[in-house]
Amino acid sequence: MKRLDKIIGFGGVIFLLAAFILFSILNIWNWQNWLILALGITGSSYFAFLYYTKREKNISQQSLKEGTNALIQVVVMLIIVGMVAFISTRQHFRKDLTKNSLYSLSDQTTKILKGLNKNVEIIGFYKNAEQSAAKDILDEYRFRSKNLTYSLIDPDEKPEMTKKYDVTKYNTIVVESNNKREMIDQLNESNLTKAIIKVTRDMDKVVYFTTGHGEIFINDDTPQGFSTAIKAIKKENYLVREINLIRKPIPDSCTILAIISPKASFFPGELDSVSVFLENGGKLLLMVDSEHQNDIADFIAKYHVTLGKDMVIDASGVGQLFGAGPGMPLVTTYDQTHPITKGFNIMSFYPYASSLTPESDIGDYKISELLKTSDNSWAETEFSSGQVDYNPGKDKKGPITLAVIIEKTLANGKQILAVFGDSDFANNGYFKNQGNSNLFLNTINYLAEDEDAISIRPKEIDDNRLTLTQANVKSLFYLVVIAIPLLVIVLGVFIFFKRNRV
Image (tube, rainbow, N blue to C red; front, side, top):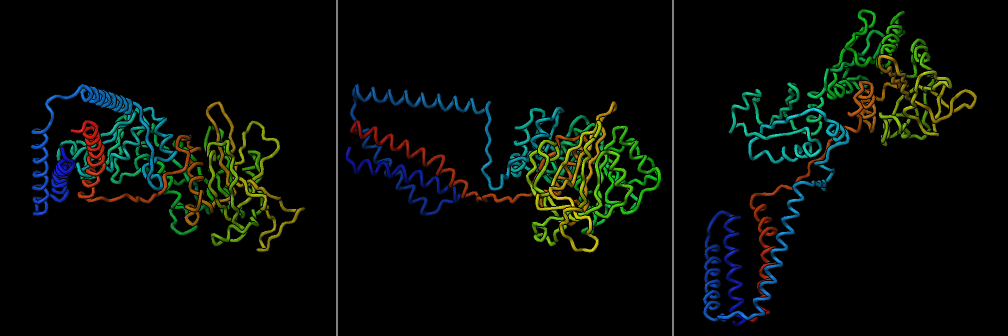
């Protein structure tokens, strides 16, 4: 067969494929498509006519041998592909290559899913056309826990399911476990993880904040207020209450008692009730500032830690980056053995903090120095004038401890005190700075004995997805799935005919 005949036949096949691909992408038959189709049919018909009229009737033994070898190679390749596909259904490997790890779960979520010992069912109510995005994140969750299952339902197709779960709008997620149910209307990692924690938790845990001594007002939205931290605590699925220790004793439902920056002295008996609470296995979060009262320092001293009547100064000048002076120490040194700060490598800041110094004799207590300032800092004892300078005889040279965890094992549990020489780091003005929020919430988790929730929280990430039109998707499909494999086949056919000189 002449070379020109082969070119005409090959061109006819190409034109045929091009005509149908263009129609699939554009969904219309215009005169250009009809012309390409006509050329394809003409060229293909011409080649087929010549081939069947001029081909040799007998296939040589060599051609048969080569054809058999080619068939065996194809069969072997199909077997290999089939084995790979079979193994891949049982052995999974997932790699997130998106910018900012769009589909990667945080350490917090991964730890919770790996420790999940209760069956959790997730039901998503999405239209069929909108289920792919939900499936991406739900697949990540299911991949990490055998106790978690999910299903996606189109509310229009199964209205009885929406009635059963009281779903009133699209894109609603229902999370169930042990007759507990949570509903979320915005699917993201933070919301979904919190819902899983809530339905698998045996009982609600309550954080009580004391009042009556000039403590920071928890609902204050000003920069000095604590409303942002309170919202974050609630997002961790803890209840928040206020308590006046004069009017009401500490209730049995109290998981954590929080005393945040008291400005006035406590009344007689109040701190004694706190001590009794601790002796019964209670958990206390105590956050003080440089201008604290003597009674709170005496209370901390009962647990073998000295609260300094000083202000920690950082001479590095880092505080100036955040609109503050040397009274805002920078911390990068953490106790890497304690669950709260293990693996913690983010900077945190503590405006106008006091020093904390464990005593040499701590008795039956275990004291962890949670975080320390740099060597380029000191605890200034004469700070009221506003002029600070390091005096070797009076001031304590850095590094300075700013937070301690005091623990003691009891017959009925464990008492834990988390003492910070600063409260401003968790106020509205500084809560979201660097690692401040993570450190604060990790402390809350540890005091609540929810160590599985301790880690860096899910961060806000940019969703830089590639948006393709329907025509783009079809074009990509034909290029990758059809065109490239077809090119390999055509080259193989060409070489076969070339070798056999058909």
